[in-house]
Image: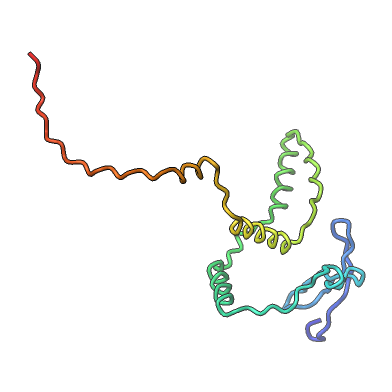
Length: 169
């Protein structure tokens, strides 16, 4: 396949679903990549409603993004990534072999309503802005106390002379 510069198109069934796949050569290996059927491909503009346009970023924004990526980057350590699904299946098999009683997992929760993140953020900013610009309300007691006649300043105190304690006879 590599010498002919060709790839094969195939279908496979995995987890009860049929997938379209491409089989191509990569060195001495054959690589299988799943693809989409024509009816699975959708136009994002029709699906999303508001499709984001071209975004231009300022230099400080780009600098900050670059710093964020650099701070989160590190060496690739494959041992840090495990197939947790495979681990759970293996634990289940071992439990069955031991004869442990197994309980069926609860049904997954119902899907929640998806909200537009930009709308939620916009509402949050507007709420915060309203709180900052709203006139501060003060209670009637505080207002009355402020309007009372000002207190006279107390005269500075002189240091008291040290008194000697005399014991009573």
